[in-house]
Image 1 (cartoon, rainbow, N blue to C red):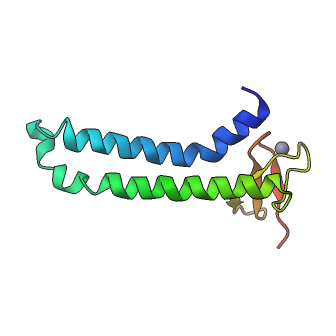
Image 2: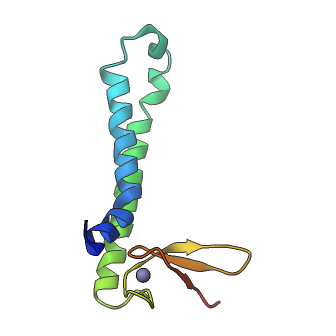
Length: 110
Ligand SMILES: [Zn+2]
């Protein structure tokens, strides 16, 4: 896996996890719904697929927008490797963004 592929994988990981949750919940409510132990939870689990699909759509859209803006140079890039930066993270030492390419931390000035 090259650096660009790894960066895309990291950017779209939340969307892929949400999609996996949605598919698992769909499997639960359809194929596994006949199992007596799980049958009682199906009315609650039927709400998981639409919520997880919406989360996947939102996080995938945000990742796509972030990558598009990074490619156009409108998004701040890593000083070390030039890769796209992830979401804003808070720590006692100050806010920072993690590079999706090399994993380095970029301090964010307030
Ligand atoms: Zn970097």
